[in-house]
Length: 567
Image 1 (tube, one colour):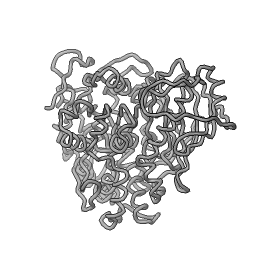
Image 2 (cartoon, one colour):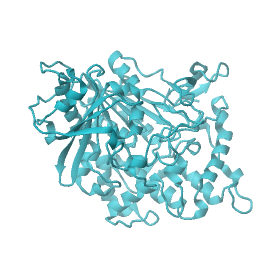
Image 3 (cartoon, one colour):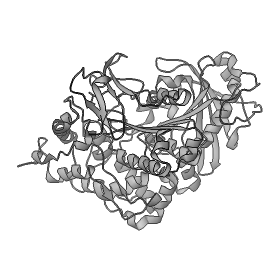
């Protein structure tokens, strides 16, 4: 994974092929895959920080709505209220370290940001932030924003995550944390406390802290509490439904990385070991583009419309034997080793290492990822000699941790020799418990979204999990509180080939489900004209395993011209 200084990362500029929109922002093909694992501050100059002095007693808040006779500090002008805020009696030993007044800019409104820490152990300190909007803007609810990669940073400090949750989130109290560590990589995983914090405890602790702060600041407890996260942040939302079923009224899990150890022990010995064993197996950006063009040409029309989008991924079985080099290797052909790399990406894998709930494999990736930034960012990287893809980094870090060897190499690492170590990690981190009946019985709602082109976290692993939930609870019960929906051709960092509609306000959909019992069965993805809010194309967002099939008539830019179909 290419390591960039945190301050170098910024919201990418618009391009002619991808729109910039608050939900599912356009992403840099070089850097977006990397930002989730690189801790540190951003835009420090924007904040006016104040270290707290005196403290006041705090009545702790419980989950759910209800009023309070406490005076509202937020009734004062925000700058005055933020400067005046002090607190000592926070749950889990949390301490406030400072407050910051953020002035509104072109993307974010005014807010008071309360920062603090929870020292869980000498090996794990949870740094957290609670973002408080003005009293007039607050909708009476909280939104916990999950992190990504191995965490180690506060998501609300990152413009990418602020764009991820979208402008609908501005009315919420936003809660986030670094999950209990501040370093890139996985070395902190040696500590059970740090591992528990990262896996599930940090979000729970910080939610209770944020709820208490909001109660004191506004004079009333939040009426609703939601969680929204992507990748590892999606996993943290799912695992909350399993471990802390009363924490949230609604969870939006986007491309959740629910089986990280299965991902690591299968990709290493199979896909990545083959790719990086020989230069003849590795695909450059030019080779990826060559394959992507051919795959799209072969499978584009299987959804009823040739528009550059592979919608019917299950019907796509293209094998690039027609691209096999007949003579010398060049950017206009693929070697046999490169074709084998592609076959492995689209294959199911099995390993003798048994992980959580008996898992012994990891499924294939969905079609369409080659047309996004995913194949380079997550699988092949930018260099054969100095591997920098996220998947290579993740597998390497896991190998180093379980071996206790900082020089562990995925080309020689044998996961079968570390069964107990991998099982320990999986038992903590994997969010695969199908019994989420307590969450459902508490009135919770779950919305899972996936891009079928994801080549970091397989859509089929989450689909298998969702099916296990149906088997455990019954399909009719699950239909009453949970949905898994998909968008074709979207990659892991929410980018695509540039032609597909991909902006969806999932937070608003969740809120409507919780507050109005309006199930998210008619979601629509929108493509906007670059740099504008003008829609130029729309597609229905279908419940997995259905996909948007063109009806054969009607304007292809309109959602009503498509029907969600299983074939």
